[in-house]
Image 1: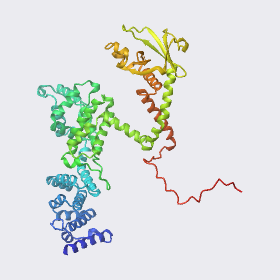
Image 2: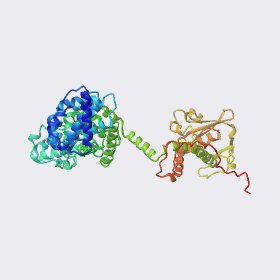
Image 3: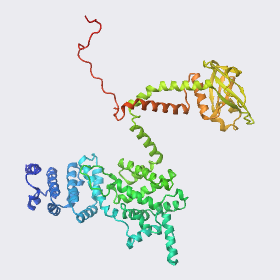
Image 4: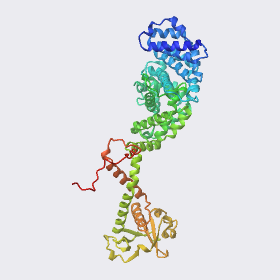
Length: 576
């Protein structure tokens, strides 16, 4: 009975405070101690939930209350609430933690994070919230997003600080990049001028734009010193991959080398923009990355994967220095698309982002462009199917007209002498094929001048490629002409008329036309291409009046018929 009374009392107090009649700042430290049920291990979780709710409101309302509550609350106990199965209790505990982190000053915030990291809070979140059996609620998603934002924003000072050339530690970090990949044994015996020349040469191989003073490349903010941090992390954590990247590109032709330093600086900036480092958390944001809670150093680890991805994409695009911005756009797209799929581990992110190669990106762009133009909307696809027969008939007529005009072919002898020409054309009534030998400079010959003919009704089959008789006879000798060869058999399949087209276009036109004469479907790639072009043009013309009007996926429902049709006018009776 007592827990229920306490629960209703705290709930009533919370609702009264929400009306704003009394300020939260009027509450005393004695009251805070009395409602600190967070530290107790009560059986009734409902009381703890309301207590957490009250404390969150106090922290957000006053900085003085923040310090009092910080002293009263045992953070260990607060973290333990994240390990329970009660999702509502988890959410309230996370809400209070986020309120403490957001209200704390810079020093207090760093101390809080240091304590939470020491207690493995992110691992508890990863195990008990992200990988729990239930789905993550909207409120919890917001708190996870806030935690991610506040934690990543600790990198903001490094991101906004340019490299100081007079700082010994920063200079050593910069030179460590060079020393990690190039031999430095004999440097001490060199003169100052010779050493500077050698360093400049090696910094150029590393991909710095200003190789005589590479610190200037890191003077831009953002990414500032954060770019130096990511590069040195990659060089020390994955030395083999780092050396391979630099040496491979420094030995390539100048126009195709991928500059490591320039790429790293731009990639670090890109990751900062994608992860929104430096932006305060939104009040309504909920876009968190599960991968953040699985890693201690998310930015650096993402960089190590993505810099190798950048090198791979550079090679796939056969990029030069002029294509640098294009490559970065593709890499940004690869990263954002992969992160949007919410990978839960670095390994999963690595596999997905590497599978999303340049050709896949192009395919996705094409598909999205078609969706944007609404050419893949169900009603549009249905309209396409209705238009196809009409457009196919148009292509058939064009093919027959081309056959009626005729084409000049060359005779290929066994000695490959291409000195004889012959002409073939279809009669205007589409019933007879006329053909015969012609001279070199003959214009379109008349049907009467072509001595030989084959009635279309006598044609038995159309053969192409290696099935043609004249290709079988010269097997091995005419392999280059297989794609241009076709034959028609007639009478009782004892005779054949053999063709070798002068181009792939003529081959497609004639094989399509002959298929039409034989009552078969056209199958050439030219027909498919032309059909797609005609369909696209026709669809665009028909949708002109619907520009900027969304097309629904399904037709609107047909209303039920009225109960009677008394409203109809009877036209059968003449008016008097």
